[in-house]
Structures are given as structure tokens and as C-alpha cells.
Image (cartoon, rainbow, N blue to C red; front, side, top):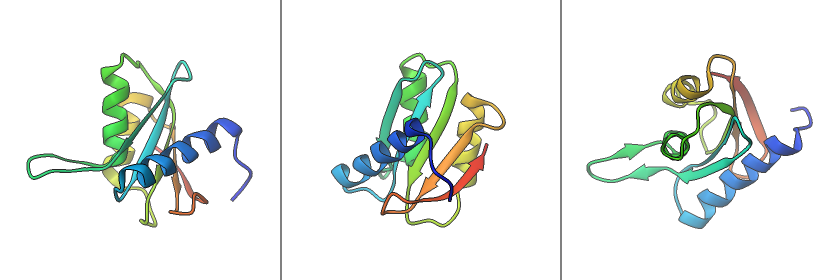
Length: 113
């Protein structure tokens, strides 16, 4: 993959840290239209299941974000989940990048919502 913008590398690093710190399957970070970042891990409760991206977007919305510049997820999966692309598109609009990185933090896929 190509060299990443430092701000995109930052959200991948934050996502990786959230995953490791919380011991969850996925970590995610999103950057809103003002440059603020929101970080979350996947949620797996009996009554609630959220991907890490869904949780991070929910945190952004709850904090007043009106749009997204980019999102990143660190996961063992090889491709972005449809639900993640949909929620990024909901807040960021079509074309918002979703960066999927492996557990080592290396970018695997740059998808557009």
C-alpha cells in the first residue's frame, strides 16, 4: 500500500491501541469534520452487538459530529464489513475513506463508503 497521510496513520494507531487495550476483536477510530477523533472497540453483549466502527461513529454522533473525514478499523478480517461501510457513508457521505488495517497495524484496504 502507499504511504499514508500522518492523520490517517494516527487513526489507525488509535484503533490498534483501542483493540489491544480493551482486548476486543476490533478497534476503530474516526475523524470528524473538525479533526476530532473518536475511538472505540467492538461491543459484544447479549443484548447489543456493534462493530468497532459502528461504536466509534455512534460516539462521534453523540458528541455532536456532523460529518466524517475518515475512519479506520483494525481487525483480522480481510475486507471491510458492509455494516461498517454503511455507517461511515451515513455520517461521512459517499466516498469517505474506510481504512482497514491488520492486527499489526499495516494498511490492507482503503475502501470508500
